[in-house]
Structures are given as structure tokens and as C-alpha cells.
Amino acid sequence: MEITRIQPAGLVVSPAFSHVAVVPPGATTIYVGGQNGVDATGAVVSPDVAEQSVRAVENATVALEAAGATLADVVQWTVLITADADLRAAYGAVAPRLATGGAPPLVTAAVVAGLGVPGALIEVSAVAAVVAS
Figure 1 (spheres, rainbow, N blue to C red):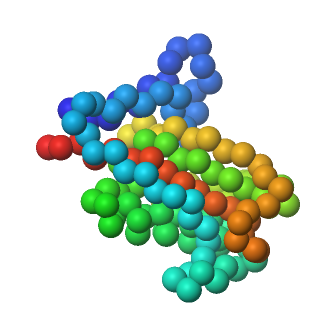
Figure 2: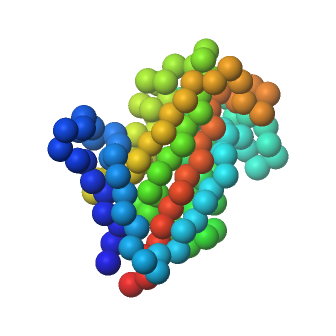
């Protein structure tokens, strides 16, 4: 059994996201809280949104791995990006890391006035599911 990601007829088809994901019974669900582009001390790694985006995804990857998951197990990403940041630069920097070869995960994105970490331009959180083999 595996996670099924669906692009229903009648909805826009995008290589960047799916619309529906079905997680089979018995899968372990993993929630990763908001990750910013910060180092292990909590310092923002750069004023550049692309660099922050890469680090935010790297931090989410570390969290996923600690729970026994990988980027391929992500069912849904939530992305918060500040109004003064370039969304295209942010996505362009991380898109290659998010490509898992199968259907893409679900994505919810929002432009916000600010984030809890001063200087942070992006925050990502994830929901993943690991299906028992």
C-alpha cells in the first residue's frame, strides 16, 4: 500500500502540487512544525530568500529523518513567505530538492506580513506519512 496523490479531472494540473492525497490505514503520520532558514543556533542564514528557503527545507529534512521519514514521504507542505520576499526565487531554489519522481505533494502557501523569527522570509511545515512495508 502507498500514498496516492491525485490530480482530479476538472482541476488545474500542476507539476508543483497535487490536489488530493489518500493515506492508507496503518501509516504513521508525522507532523513537522514550522522551519525557517536558520542554523543550529537559531541565526538566520542569509538575507536572501533563496538561501533561507534551501535551509528551511534542509531543516525540515533533518526533522523528517529524525522521525524515520524522507522528503518523498511528505503528503503536504505549508509555506509562509513574507510579502517582501520573491516567491519565484524561493521556489526555484528548493524545487529540485522537492522532486521525488512521483506525483507532487499537496501545497498550501500564504503571503504574510511577517514571521516569528526576526529576519526570516520563509517558513515551511510538513505533514508526512510512512507506510509500513
